[in-house]
Amino acid sequence: MSSGYARLIALRVALAAMSLMLLASPGFAQSQGIVTVDRAVIWRTDSSVVAAVVDAGLVLELTGRSDRWYEVVIPASLGGRGERGLIAVTQIRLLDQSVEPIERQLPGNDLPNDDPLSGLPPLPPQPRGPATSFRAFVQAGLIGFAARESFTAVTGESFGPSVGGGVEARFRAGLYLQLSLERYKQTGQRVFVFGGEVFPLGVPNTVTIEPLTASVGYRPPTSLALQPYVGGGFGSYRLREVSPFDTANEEVDERHLGYHVHGGLELRTRWWVAPAVEVRYSTVPDSLGTGGAAAAFAESDLGGWQFAARLLIGR
Image 1 (cartoon, rainbow, N blue to C red):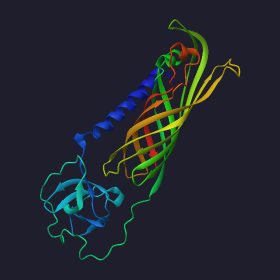
Image 2 (image 1 turned 180 degrees about the vertical axis):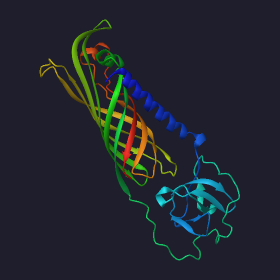
Image 3 (image 1 turned 180 degrees about the horizontal axis):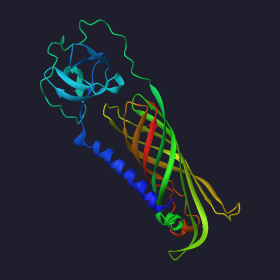
Image 4 (image 1 turned 135 degrees about the vertical axis):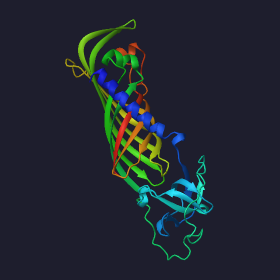
């Protein structure tokens, strides 16, 4: 893959990341509150009709306030499509660092009272969704290696494209587990390094890196469209180097233990697919440097920074 195409991938991933992070900045943040009681009622704003019954712990986006009511966005998980509803101010607590929404005149003076369940018949328990859900994902991105001089000498670039995929298990409390497999493959040439100077040998050399990683992370429950998440984990990093004239003893095929941390932003949608951008830093100690260019440049870490665009499939 040419360096120009790799740079184009890097530019597109960076633009996507900047756009989502800008939308997630405080200037775009909405007021949020958490429901403090079980079986709290959200009323429709245009009539005395119950829109939803919710339990304590649900986070709602607040768009307005009066003496008696908060105006909220009815979550998509409860069948909402951007409609507004009313919930009693006594049943909401603002989240930390969240500001009060604008105070204004709201409908709802003809609603029963601040105890919205009084006079109503008992309602059946409302579904809260499964305790655990599973999703698959695919991703493409760009990885910049910590061993910059070694990769530049062999492949011509200290970075390159990577592709991969995996599965994710999500839990209601916001925790998630991930298992992923990625691949980086680039063909360069064998080199000889002497006195810090690189001498190409003209022998093709294909470098393949395949990280198989497991991660645990946390995605805070929120009603916002953009959902941040952070996590970390470990994995087995397979390194292969193959040249056409190698004997069996000359081929490199090794596995090394590595560690990583990651963070990202996911755009929640109403469909079964959701885009996300992610930044990851990995370290694979003592995986290089026993010979060749890596030894000459005293570089021993196979890890580095990675920027990826991801598409998640499932609920």
